[in-house]
Structure formats: structure tokens, C-alpha cells
Length: 205
Image (cartoon, rainbow, N blue to C red):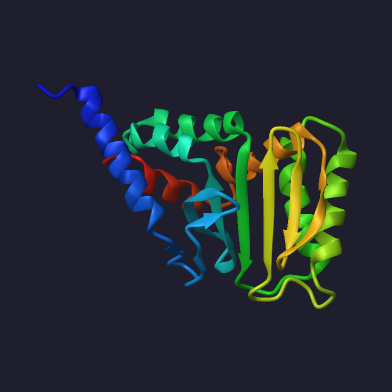
């Protein structure tokens, strides 16, 4: 008789295959994201809204090991969200890709991200200012126009910033990297749609 554990692993493997070939489009904006980035796999996509305005779409990427853990969870189980939130930090490899849908001034965009990170960050406020400076360094003078891309790569000890495909630098701070992940994954996340999409596509029914 086939054990339940073997069946669970088989289902998990099947889900990973499906996810691996399924690059996704944010239905709210029509913006698409590739299925991999920097060796990491696409977890979920969603929109960042400000009232009725769809500011940008965001995609999260992380490891296949975390995918396997999520594939063994029921998406309606509260445990699944906990596995996602804790797993991203335990893996120490997560990337958040932002693609602008609505034009925002460079200073306003950088400040908005910094203001979201600051209350979640337990380290020096200078770390947040450094992150803001990297965003400002990369965003064109005309502002973050539609199609502008920003990538934030979070590891155990730092966060790096890339704007329109050009690396802008990094901030060495484990707390800042953790706080950035929380911006998109905690209970007050700025894109509930992206967080839910991760669970919908990676967990069992």
C-alpha cells in the first residue's frame, strides 16, 4: 500500500512542475513576470493599490525548498501563511520585483517604500535612508514611469537594489532585509493580492 507520505511528496513534486512552467500575469494590471529570476522561482504576483489607483504590480521569488514546504500545506490552513512568512526568512533568499503601472515621482516613490519599511525595521534609521538613497539613485529624473522596474533582493544579511536592470548597490542589514519581506508578507502587507497568490498557487486545495 502506498503511504500517505509518498502521495504527499508526489503531489508536491507535481505542483512544483506546474509552477515551474507557469509564468504569471497580474490580472489587475496585465503586467507579466517571468517564472524565474536569479535562480529563484516565481511564487506569486499581485497589485499594490492606493485607493482606486493601481500603482504597481509586484512578484515574489524564492527557493524551491520553500516551494516544497508550501506544497504540503492546505492553502486554507493558517499554518500555510506562517510557513510562507517564516520560510522566506529562514531560506535567506527572496526577491521582490516591482513593475510600475502608474507614474510616481522619484522622491515620492522612494519615500513610500522607505516609509513602509521603517516601522518594521528594528535597526538603525540610517539603514532605511541608505535604501531610499539607492532607489533615488536608480529611478530616472522623470520619475518612476509606467514600465519602470525595481528589484529588491533580500538575503540573511543584506538587501540589494536594481532599477531598470542596473544594480544600484546594497545595504548590509539583516533587519532591513527582514523588514522588507514583511512589507509584502505580514498581516499589514501592502499587496494582499500578491501574498494570497503565493498561497493559491503553491499550496494544496
